Amino acid sequence: MTHIIFSDYRNPAAEQAYEIAWDFLARTGMIQDEFEACVFLAQRIAVMVDQGHTSRIRMANRAITEYQHHIDECDDRVRCGGMR
Image 1 (tube, rainbow, N blue to C red):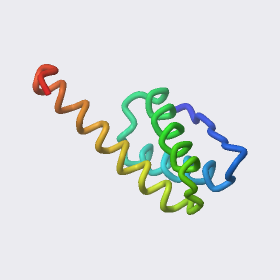
Image 2: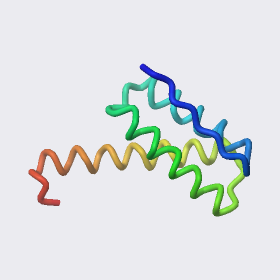
Image 3: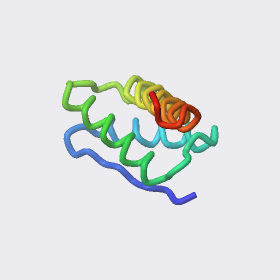
Image 4: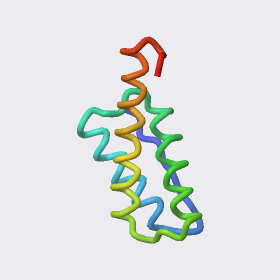
């Protein structure tokens, strides 16, 4: 698995949050598409930085949860034939 790097100059905790989330998702085998996962996590964490979040653990946990919901929704759409 290729390791994709994310950095946000506004908040060093953002890079750490991304690393924590990426490592967790990679270890659990949830990353189906590396590029899509990278973009998803980076966007979510950047939004959290915009909102003023500073806790790397809180940002990582929220990004993980949102990614899991995203994957579940994608899987549901596939199972339901896109009729969701």
